[in-house]
Length: 205
Image 1: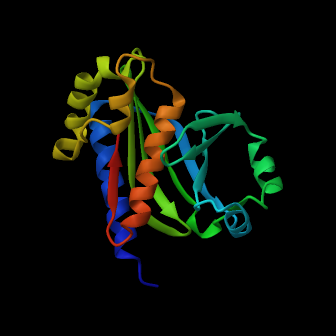
Image 2: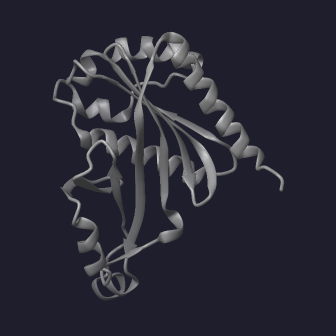
């Protein structure tokens, strides 16, 4: 059986990043998972009401096991309880699940001083498609106040691959960072990977 070269490259990059974290002194703190299912407006709804088709993303994050997040690409983020998935089944006349588009990232959580780092492998079906890196500075809840510190820390193990300022920060200004802000960034990363399946994509926050 031939091993997929893309999956091999993704795995090697994940191992390289986690090794650098461990050299810094980061300690493993369990695992994490973020998943995303895509729902599109049912054709019958578009036809009868003259609406343009919309995509809705229903997401889960193991950091918030009792919550479910529903997002539109350019709209609000709804935070509901875990029973929202059952509601979506009942709304199948309005929104249909595009099952082939399910995407998720799984990996290891690391704690380094006041930083929480999650390095994951993004998969669609059985195939590895890219990498996610989430970094949180736990003492701070105003994202713009600690961006320079976050950037300096990310460069210590990601080098030139450290990201620029996330778009969600531009709308936050001095307001408190929330779980929905994290989910918006995962949604953006997943959509980027869906559109660029030809090469591995490293998405970092």
